Image 1 (tube, rainbow, N blue to C red):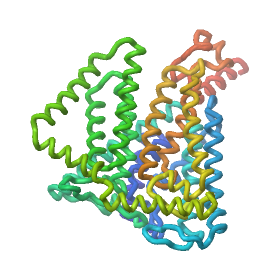
Image 2: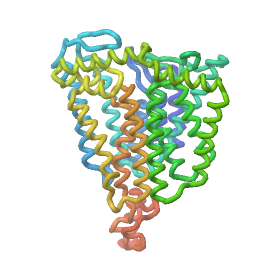
Image 3: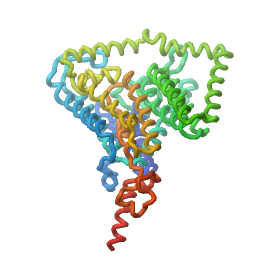
Image 4: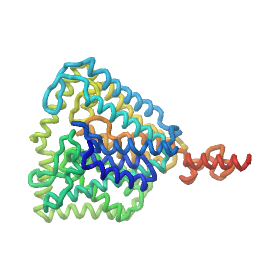
Length: 482
């Protein structure tokens, strides 16, 4: 059945199709932020906006003859094979294991129920198939298409940040807030904005605050990478600060731990960059000094700031074990491990159980083999960075490193508080990390007579596009053989 989200979503898809020029990945990445909404509801099952976007936009792009099917040359093949093996393992578990281990007790929400194959398994298999389509679209895209997709992912994070600010205004001064538009998925338990120790905890367009934190932190990582590697712009600095504040307003342990890890990686990366270049950018050092000085002055001079800081730290980290949410997560972890043991470490199948934390969910669903394949696929992404090819340009290397940083933050968030590995942005990042290091940066051999000065050397991005190269080859052949 249609929801309050359906019509606005269709109008949004029309605009996104025009603005992105039919870039399906960009449209899916942007609409993925509407995590708590549903385009259509079928009883207790809801269709996510990104899934509807994929179902509408991909056939249109195929009908226009604009969708490539060839995998990007130079792809990281070990990583590709491991991802495919993981998909097959998840699909096999969802189809077979619920029948093999039928009847054993599994945790459903807060109760133990006998295992049986049902709609949740079918729904998760459909989402897994959609995630695999996102992955295939990514590894068959050009560099420009991927850059556009990530630009729209960042715009999605900015949109969620703006909506979070509006949600805070609704909580404080009671301005109208469109709950029916953003929270139309009846299949999810949605935790609206509420107070912890007198502080508002926001969830924006997501089901809960930890989901919001885990989804926006990768965007914070991307913006931080851009600020570290490129010239600082005031607009980029404001966007970065706004997204950072939005994550802090979630009061999420997941978000705070991800930010701490991101800060540690950023410090090490910047020190390494300064050592490599034998110097530091004065403007970036000035920004860091001003931020440190402002924070230190506020903590020293204001008792209220010190009190609020202590309340946040105690609520989010120190006293977290006393919260009901922590106890519920511990119970789900224990039950997931018991389920794993009851099935001889094979799992009960995709969609049969959902634990708090992606690692526990994979273990309980597809067993030790599923978690091993996912871990190996993730680690294989770092091979081209550790041993880069001599043909890899600095631009591609930087794009790959930025993608791996964002993916590491996303995976960290999902391991801490995620569930099934079916998020579209997860596989967009996975696919991009596989193909970025191998993108061509020199004119192909068959085109070298036309542009001999670029043969074997880095060339502008417009010369490295497969579409452009193919078009040029066709025109050249026609000119030689009219």
